[in-house]
Length: 290
Length: 219
Image 1 (cartoon, helix red, strand yellow):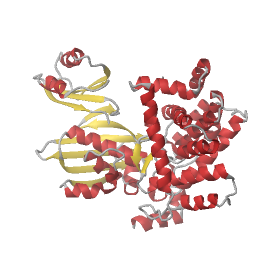
Image 2 (image 1 turned 120 degrees about the vertical axis):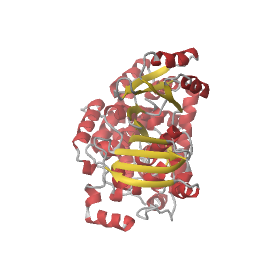
Image 3 (image 1 turned 90 degrees about the vertical axis):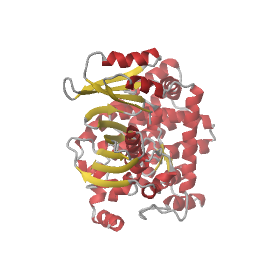
Image 4 (image 1 turned 180 degrees about the horizontal axis):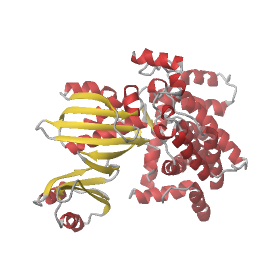
């Protein structure tokens, strides 16, 4: 498979009467010259690393090497445990996990890029949260990772998953779209709904710039992961309710590519523009690097 | 495309392009040298030049040159490890004209004086493209086992080399031939399915017109 169209993926799944993940597992086993069980086992390993990076990230005393960030997952954990967060249990849990994985990453801990390290908190937060909340089998989570990977592969083929090429829309945007499609499949939605969820999630993040303070994957990346998982839930929820994206996912990806191309280099991971160029952003940079 | 390029790599943070991708570029350069490096000059261009300190790109490249994988916890301490084992390394910020925003050029020297120069770009999600080996422009993803053959530009070389692979049942996925000038030194870049043993390398190297042959494992 070429992974150059979400619509084609959906069409194949619909024709065979299966989920997108079933199509992708079969294809990937063939490409990698392994059995479907072996491909599944490898993805299961990624899910396990995701779980570990959530646990590692919830730490009261955690600080990144730069000293700029840390312990926000812990703070969120406390509020959710006390039942005091305003968005309810699912959103609260998702935010805890997204922050935790992102903070593990900022501390040079072990994570699974999904699709990148800068956006590594979104997909695990979405999948692990809905799995726990709905009491789903782990198999659904592992399979959903294949669905997410397919969405990511199309975006990587037709646009970009690198902040340096397409801004943050290419990283947290892609992660959010991947997570939205995965959530739809895990919650019993159709492949077509997964396509709409992908389109909606991506549309909401179009144009987002990559402007890391001091060039570090910390500010604003960690909080954008919390936003990214929230956006994934919004998109999945809408799609599962039967709400459709007026613009097809493949055209949204096309728009994303065009927007990324027209973005100034200052807004594509060079730490020359956006938040990195604010007085506070510059002061923080000076604090770290002198 | 590969699902595990998107959900993956499993890696040490903080940046897939600036850390994991950089480890891979370094690792590829190290394996092209094929022996222990004693000196390394690393030239960062574009976003790499501007932000390498913050992303640990320096640690990552050195870790890769030392042969570490993207998920090796020692990446955090690679600078100290390199100093301990006597690798003399220097970082330079440059502007390589027309290069991808995340580009590194690595010049390595081995104990016996063997030198290589490898230029690579980190294109997102930890994926890389090697764009130049010594003075030859290439296009290698490192995802397949790659055989690089330097040879004199004379007739029959392609069939000599590919026959060796054919006789061993090796399937070629991609083949590229580059030459700087007619009759000069040419380079074959052969990506194959699966793996081959060093015997293939010896067989290819035995042709009088082959000046160097290297098998690079997928990274």
